[in-house]
Image 1 (tube, rainbow, N blue to C red):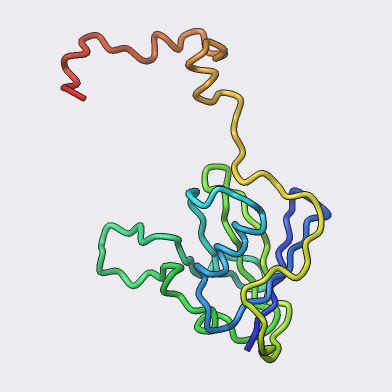
Image 2: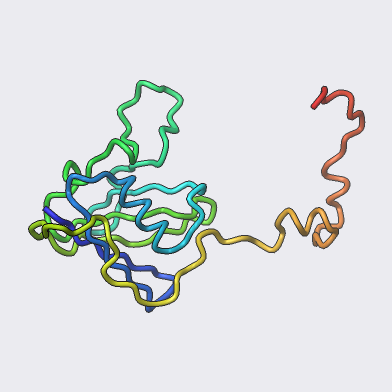
Length: 170
């Protein structure tokens, strides 16, 4: 079976992406398709958050196993097959692409169809609207701190290295 997922953003009104992906493929395949289509930095963290019809969290599929207990059963993208989590049209999830600002896309399984021979999956079949930024960066970023444009005048007081030797060798 082939799943057609529709992706929407609450930040960009006209942003729509439709992806066709085989039900036997993994969430990692879907993640890579999204990242490739949007030309985003694949080194950034992301996860799929499984939700109910009211967009309330029911589970999570992470890019990496981030649990302290390596024997946990938490699903990771490269092992989680889509058909194990999605069986019906209208099922929903979020694609969290910016953890620090808690930003995500709304994703819905729009259609389930038969596989088309000689078709490559996953593929983006609809791409409309302006792509939101992958990561929001606040004004008080590291460049501002390094180059003296930081608004906090007490910044130098907040961080000190009274005795650099106390921190050991590099």
